[in-house]
Length: 138
Image 1 (spheres, rainbow, N blue to C red):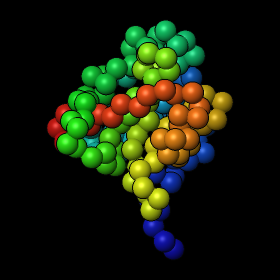
Image 2: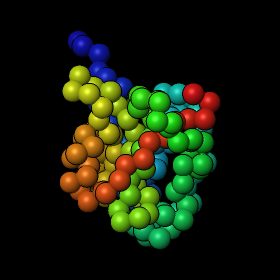
Image 3: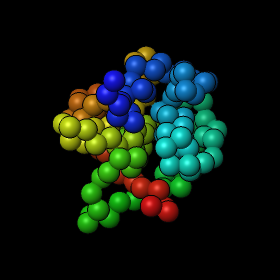
Image 4: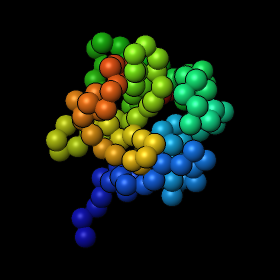
């Protein structure tokens, strides 16, 4: 039996405001869970109701996950985190996954669950900008 890529087991998992990883997620808990399971990095729980956009914008920042912005010289790799913006606020996050088709983003959407899509597909959902970050210790 062929081995799955690290990201395949997450696709299709449902979104829940109060997630129960590894069975359900919201966008922030998906990142926290993957970083803990695959990198051994523990980050603080995001204290925000994912159904209230204002709380997510206020509390879900790259620093909460122990992230630093990628420099222009760095290439996105597996487990790098992206923050999506609509209009001017970062209000959603995902994680980079290198696939046979190139860079994809694994993220968990309310009403959809965990999906794997490229940057173009994510932007078709209304996200205007995507900013990339990496764990500080990587």
